[in-house]
Amino acid sequence: MTTDQNTNDPRFVFACALDGAGGSHPVATQTAEPRWYHLDYSQPDTREALSGLGLDTGLIDSLTASRYVEDLDLVRERAMVLQEELLNRNVEQQNARMYVLAILSAIFLPITFITGLFGMNVAGLPGTRDGHAFAIVVAIMAAALAVVVALMRRKHWF
Image (tube, rainbow, N blue to C red; front, side, top):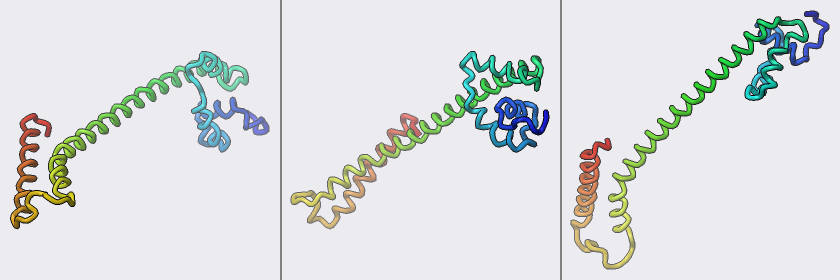
């Protein structure tokens, strides 16, 4: 290939990237990767364009072009499998975190209810005149916590 040929030609850039010259050619390095992501492999025209890419310019022969197309298909399939695996891993992590949050919510719900009930500023709350009322409320909350934890352990939730 001559140096005075248009180096901004996408076929030249893609062919340089396929031939391994993309790392040494600055234009190919800058433009080959963005063009790579814009290829739509689901369209049948894309296969024909890729297979005929180097044949028109004489850069690559038909066997090499078909090998590149097959390699691109394999890479696409591997990328789809990896994407599914990453999605499944993220879903599993999210489910585990939601499980922990649900258990923590179930543990603290009775305690929060009792605290909120006795935190109201209204007349007639039980134990407002008793000196041991605070200890009794704390004991009730500890008992509620123990009951919830015991039920969760019995059901093997944690």
